[in-house]
Amino acid sequence: MGKETTPKIDDVRVIEFCREVAPASRCSYVQVITENNAIHRDCFNNVSKKIAADGGTMQLGWTIWLRPNVLLSADCHAVWVNNENVMIDITPQPDGEERILFLPDNTIDSIEFRIPSKYKALTKSPLVAEFVELLDARGKFLSKFKTSDVMLNMSESEKMTDLVLSMRIDEINVEIKRKVGRNASCPCLSEMKYKKCCGA
Image 1: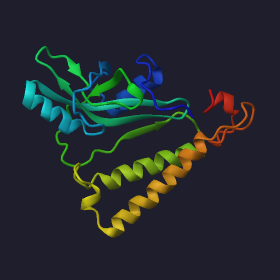
Image 2: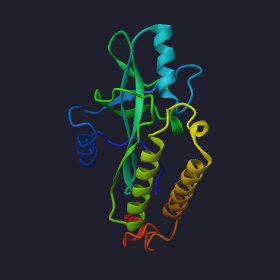
Image 3: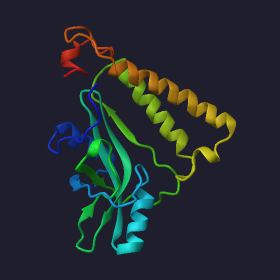
């Protein structure tokens, strides 16, 4: 499985996925200009601090990611809109992404509680299907907790539930990433050759 990356905006699968996530909106590329002292995975606080310092507004929506031949995902995200009405992603992104594919969503009216990511499998692999089901289940489980200090708000039994889900997700992730010969069956169990599936 290739690493998670920003997909092409004209990919039909991406267009269809965006319609499913936010039917009334359209995705666009947003430049990443990391703000000093901005923290990875803390976009809401990062943008709030930027607005307090320099004005502008916050646009909520979804960052669209692609795991080639495996799945598409949409993570709830916030970008800063400057006084010229230009959206800028000020939060550091993994692997030094210089731009993200962002889908505005004005139906998101609160970020007090965690908002689950959305996923769409790109293969008929039963292992990927289980992977998506587990990611969905963990997202729904975490959505009952406030965005800040999730672990501090969990009971011991809730921490155990999260651990069990996380462990199985990690196990599948490792298996899907496992490299085999290009002509061997893909480890994702799609019944395709590795070179035409996760190894493409």
